[in-house]
Amino acid sequence: MLSSVTAKDKKKFIQWFLNHYRLKKRESVWILNYLVNHMDILEHVHFVRDVKYCPRGVMISSRCSDKIPFRFYKNHLVTTDAEKTFHDIRLNKQESLFIQLNFHQANQNAYYAAVLEENPFLPEDYYVTKDDKQTTVDLLDRLLVNQKREQLREEIDQALDTGDQAKFIELTKELEKLMNKS
Image 1: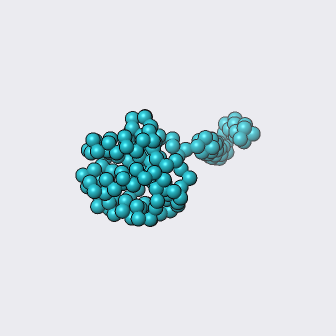
Image 2: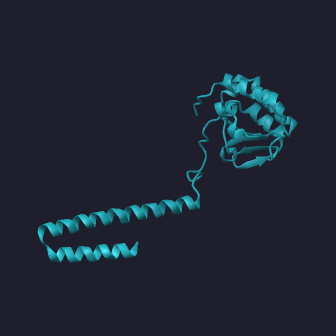
Image 3: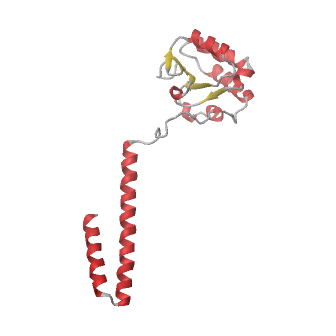
């Protein structure tokens, strides 16, 4: 995965973050400091939302967040052991590491937004709710009915222009059924 965010920008952001927020778990500070001091690892670090969908990710929370303090996700396994996480990061330097930071108004923070990347592992329907799906179905149904109604009206006009009374009666009945149905 190619990142549009440079390792230098990630380093500056982590330093800013550590200077402005206190973390719930002190080991989280160790991990972020380790990343700051290893540019080769930072090349493979990606800040994303919803890290739980990533094959290898860390969720870190500040004290001002109501989220859990720390989680490490690796291939559908989850741990809260920061030391295991640190060793995994240290031993797998070339693997992509996805990080989610939870802090007060993170979604409105310009510094975080500058390093935030799209999470490529989100499910296709992640942003779609059942209400959205039903709204889409209803809209499509309405559009199809409108299209059919317009088509029938054009054909009715054509039947009037040509004087085809039988076709006119047939089409108006069909239009009436359609209007009653919708």
